[in-house]
Image (cartoon, rainbow, N blue to C red; front, side, top):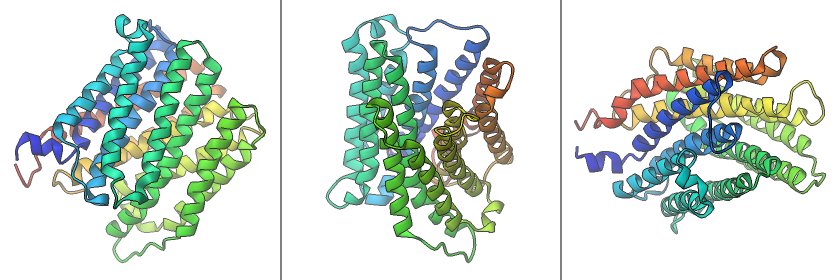
Length: 386
């Protein structure tokens, strides 16, 4: 199989590998920061949050959707040359925080990130929104809003508006809950029926639509309550979103999933998202769990673990290999879920920065296992076309 076709037909290869390598490096730097510190042109806390969201999570999501969209809409994947162009822009965005010339000029700094978003959204629009696939407008809209959040955040960060930046960072995380719910409601029932013999998932389209709407409303409610100081009851909406997502998850569940690590990991990740939304909502009424700590149930327990599970599944299935989890995969996921709980409870420990450092290195270790095991798979041709 020619290299051009190998990557052009499977956009996940470049995006999964590049973003995973970057996540490992960024997490190692973050863990190092709490022990010895390092100098950055921006606030290191902001840099860490931004890179985990827009340097890791977003390109993984793009890689998955670019690949899946071929089956959803029948539209051919983005050309390899354009994929490489997007990857180069993504890499340049990472460098903007380290190269003085790129960071010291506002127009250049913002321009690089804006060019990346416009280029990526153009490819996504082509994949999802041609005349026969209007049903996927929700996916595009979520990424479009993420782009606006990211660019606004970068501008405000350069102006020193740290409080507003924090609101936008949190809004971006909550937006990922909407995306996870949208994708999860499509792939979890499908994967369950394929993996568990004789099981027929009972779909509840009304509940799925209601859950999507309430989760989206909870994001808007949080944003308006913090940005405009409007009493939009975000705590109630977040609790409702968590409850509805949990109800939806239970409706898909069957005990047969526990024999398939690549399946139960998706269920547990979805459960962490539901739990994270619940605790974030509860934090508005009780102080025993700080909001930012509860948010890590979503960022680590839901986002990171679900992306890892999807990357493993897609990397195996779309390269002609048997979709069977590596032996260590279950333990790695359990470690990641444990890290999510430890990070949420970091405020209880006598030295929270040390706990933050340990959890960062632990997460880096788990993601590095994917890079080591699947790096070669992502670069090689399909085994049935080698």
